[in-house]
Image (cartoon, rainbow, N blue to C red; front, side):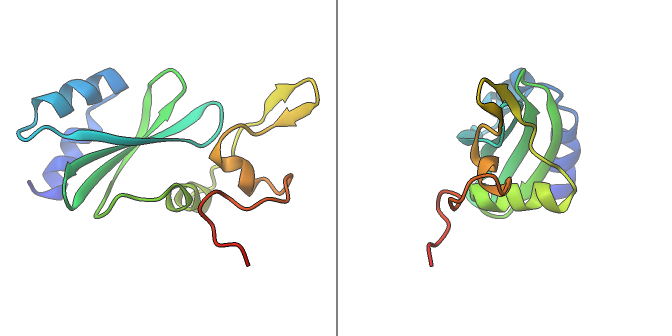
Length: 123
């Protein structure tokens, strides 16, 4: 399957329900392999299309697909976060009793916590 044709096909999918239906219709079936919760409202859903093609759907908390990208490997949470930040995305804080908090993997990018992102090397 050529990536430009695949990208056009995936770009038509507007919800996770449509992504699921599409993945089940593939031969062999595409496989949901991970969901990275970046913050309370933004999630990256990783689907293995083939051994060397992964589709990443940027979704809202209600399952609306906001963007799709094709990778040649299964991207790590750090790679996904870095790509989002490079494009100008910023995590949305959640109002808590203690104050605004970023929930999810992107919390480590906020500078508010003195902890590394999971999977980052500790010096």
